[in-house]
Length: 228
Image 1 (cartoon, one colour):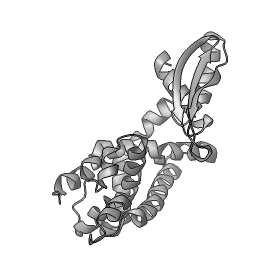
Image 2: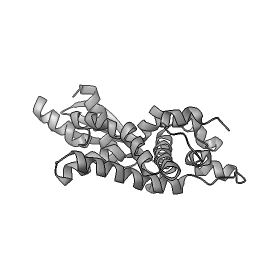
Image 3: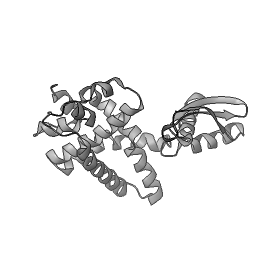
């Protein structure tokens, strides 16, 4: 097993029970491949960490901002979604310490991002069990709530489709349209490639497991492409 002390340093927590941290890093696939491993997988810790994270963020927003509930809800969703949590995991270096099956270890795509996001929640659950709520809250403030000014400043709490439509109408007077460029896979697990157009110009493409997800990805890339 790897020495976890560099990860503890990144997390800002010196674990009394190192096994809690190790369990937070243990994916179900690793247990399936190593059934005699002495710890369970991280899904129960993830369940706990999700609740701790939500409370820490909610309390912070409630105490610090007088904004209406709808706005605070949007800000919170931007802070606790899987995209943000996988970004946090990369920042901290969680990826280097995950226990995965050989198959999962080779996959570096979207599935890995979900695994990383879940491991971040599991780590929060582990911190809570090991050192209490205030330590978990300190971690959340330091690594997650610290991203809030950027979210507010760049309006990242608004979905990309709405933002791209608003910018396109303001800047070039055109409402974006979306077209399915490609699709494959069985009905229960389809993949779609969606193009977003301004008139006849295709600005960007996005891929997703639904048309909606593909449109969101395309709009996100279009905002980057246009520098809006």
